[in-house]
Image (cartoon, rainbow, N blue to C red):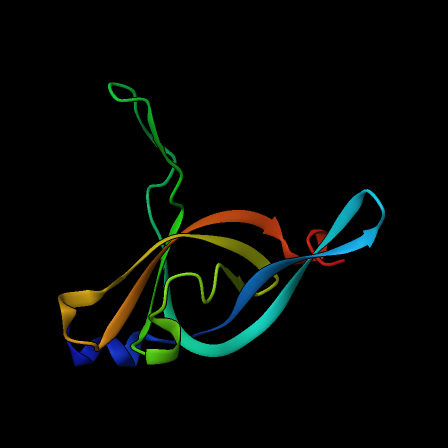
Length: 118
């Protein structure tokens, strides 16, 4: 990966944080707070590969690469991505090459955003 990757960042995505708020005595309502809109490269991967020897389940369906942002480098700052009405859950994130140029997110597709908005 190099600076030429920046030119391939053509997908406008919304980064969101999940939060629960009490709706009545015995239930919570899940809401998704907008954290930031960024440009990135969203790529579909082979996805849903199963590693049966250790019973690990990898459900990565996409990877998202964005430019490094110090406000997003903290774990737990964002946990969902929305692109064209599709919701993705962030499985893992890593700072590429430890040079603070790009952040790579491994994503799991959850479905349409409208089914997750309360």
